[in-house]
Length: 122
Length: 507
Image 1 (tube, rainbow over the protein chains, first blue to last red):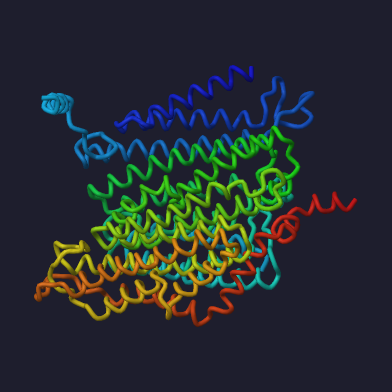
Image 2 (image 1 turned 60 degrees about the vertical axis):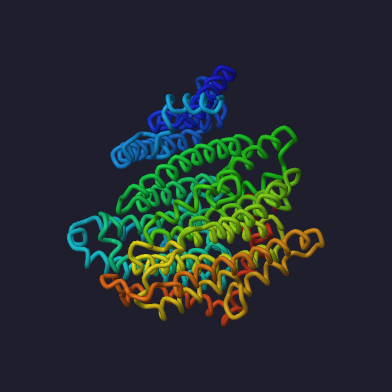
């Protein structure tokens, strides 16, 4: 169970980081969402994974740590609010700046780059 | 008073919420008066809290009456209360300036400002690492909204970068906290400090990774070298009162480095003792260098001041790297000084840019300023303070930092870099001053707005803090040194906060 869990968190983090480094604001927002999912799962696991263990004393043979669950709840709420803000900001930037690149201006389109390269080769 | 410690968080929260409700939300004038009155009360509360902690020593406010390592606590020690006082004073001045017209540019300026102050105060006062994260988020979301307040292309673009960087930073923060909770089993800072020396080898490596991730996050907030590129443009594009309150935001990151990497992972941390030092030394010195280069290259006054923020952050982080009580005391004094001065200069830069018409605050020849004398005095006070020339507090602050470098190796690195950066700051600021005030084409821009009395009062309140820091230098340095000693000594900063552990040890 631990291996699978760690693998999932790792994949989510890797995808999140990859997407966050993209140039368009949409993929960046999706990347941030994935990162926050990965963080939430990671925080949950910091109290160790246990089966059949309630987070309440006296309700089962063993008990799981309730604190990470409280932390995850807080982190989910905050992460959700921040993502909502990032989405609205991305839309505002699209409207204000006329494109959806995070730098506010598009890199030169591929055609000119190609011709530029050819010009350089000649 | 027993409940004094929580008031710096509760008061801005309540004021901000009330400002959103009918009697205040309808007219701007009522909002202004209520917000200013609230800040005045907050200054009194913060001053009382500082006096109380200096009399009675560190006090702990146990929220919900849950015992220390298990529940959430607020810790009011000399360092945090001093910074809370600085924060509310700065917020008062910046807000006063904002009341002169900047609050009209968009909605909800006053409530957002209150929430910003609440987040900063909370980050200073909390004694719980996860709560630190929560207050970081509170101050961040308020700062996102304040940064874009008023709108415009430049602000949108700067906010986009700022928001994305800080969201990634928050994720890293949570990863770090998760690792630390997994290894130490606690998030109460005093408890962490007590437990970190008992870690076995495999857990110590994990804890080191967690603490390093926290260092990355605090480095991002405090503009440590590879993570400082967002700062100049963000600060330069913010409106003046917002830029002024942002001057203390980098200091929140620096405070967190002191709190986590000196108090928890300091001299007493066993295997992990002073783990951040090796990273902080080169990066802090390089931060000073890059701030200096940025100040030289800055084409506008706002960018110049923003780069001076980077420079002062570098100087403070050098103190953090020295890991001695003297250095921490010097850093606290320098922090007080540099925050008020840079905030004041952001306000001056705004007035100047409004009076120069199209040239704004760019260093080009343009029409003359309408109020050259009074603005010149304010600018000169700020510049002399920032450079660190004798009559004002920058001189005392820099001397304290230079004195704190005791071993020869420290002197070899710190002295030349600090002194050369001061010289460079002198050159770039005097170039800025001569261009802005003297190189003009004669005529005055007729429709240029004159700085109102409220704006000038706000500027000079901030600037007056600098000579006051010199006049009352003795007691203030004493308080700063006392706070630094408290932070470094676990018998003051750790064990008194953990009554259950202490009694357990006695039995």
